[in-house]
Length: 138
Image (tube, rainbow, N blue to C red; front, side, top):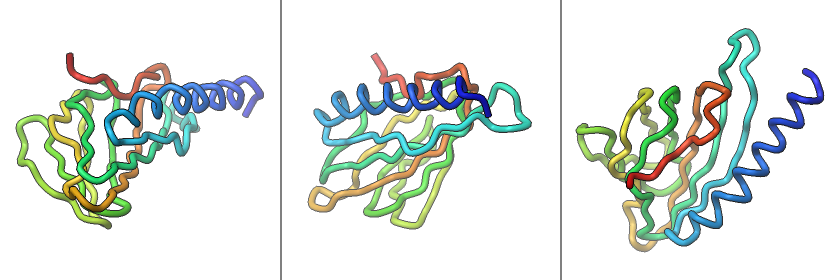
């Protein structure tokens, strides 16, 4: 691995960390970069992981992810209510997981509890050039 790759990944994590929490905290959620690495042997693809901490009753706005993103989501603690595209709205409990296909629209993403916090790990397999992982609906 060369120094430019390492510095590029570090700068990306810093940029995401600096920008995301300031916006997210206003909604009662905090998104924290956890991992960012180009995938060896798969040119142009990266594995990126973030944690999403939801305050009691907090929600993410309806959003889409990078068009190339395949997402695996794992509920670390609490209960997360989720709906992707026109699929069934469901509550996922700690230890459960779900996925989102590329181009999916995340209609509902929120803490299902108004009294307890919740935490989610989201792992993205994404085109390395796609740095905007989440785009809120207009």
